[in-house]
Image (cartoon, rainbow, N blue to C red):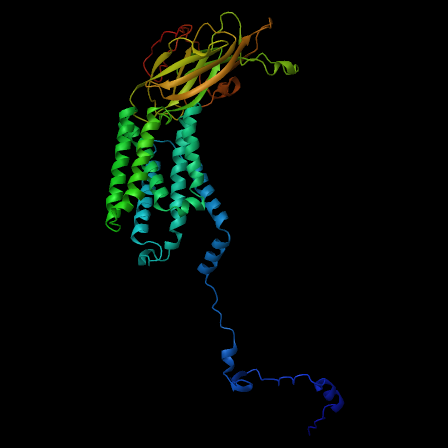
Length: 475
């Protein structure tokens, strides 16, 4: 038997009683009833299906979550693509004549040109092609990743081939483009910036490729690279004309930025701003004596007049002078395999107290060639009439493009006690000189002095070219 106990009447009256004049509370509506207003002041409950009252929001897919995350962290995404492409090239970049590097860079250019054309074929607001529908949203990041990769490759190659202030301006400009490539402002400017960057990358690619294929450098080689770059921009313009026949649009967005970059590159080469790629100095230094002690081995001698327990001697001149001392400029210069013999010039400059920087002599022209090693071809030159003060030695191509420079200070040696010599050895395989201890461990046979060294001469090593003795450069 079930009994029902009536509720407490007094408690119920207290809960439901309202002060005089207060509106009557609304009745409790079941969960499956929706209250609607049929007419002003007339409320009619309507029964609905309980399933309709369950929240039916669509669960976001993984791709939607990823897209939302990208939107929230857009700046971090740009930074990640920037540093990712740059670091990848630093790690993976090999020699300029490496076939894989050349093929990879060419593939990047083809992908970039294809994406730029597809953007004109399918502008914003139109449905992309079905084959690219799933990845079309990533085209923006792909374009800037490939641009960043190419610009970083060319910037690193130029950095290896340059020295001095003026050529570094071009490298700094390349780095500025590399950074600007990731800024939203440049992304919104559309095809003008992208065509400019593509025009720059195409010509720089040919400027790196042609010397490797031809085996020579010079103005006509770079002019050929510019010509191929102009032809590429003309071809891009013709392809875009199929989908955008507006000639005014093509001239403003393709012809002006594309051919304008080509003209600027040619002008930069003529004034010596663009470095002489692919030549690159792997190592250089100033020594008190340089001589070949065995086939493939050079002995480099320097003097350090600083004393560890005398702090006032730590910041003395780089090159201390005693009667008969000469500075020797030793360098290793790299050129691709099968590169034709070429000439470089070594010039010495002295900072005269009254005249400023003046040349010390007419310079020394050296005939060098590629020996196929990563370290490059080794050579040295010297000068006479060394005076106390600031000096500079510059290595340049035959047509005056600077490859390397070293600055050093010279001063009189005030000490009379025997000198402490630091001796190092330069070998074919090692780019940096080895200490005496390291060289003793690696050599197979004792080194015997050649005995045929002419003071002030720059002999060609027997393991690189036939033995020759070049006269010492004199002022």
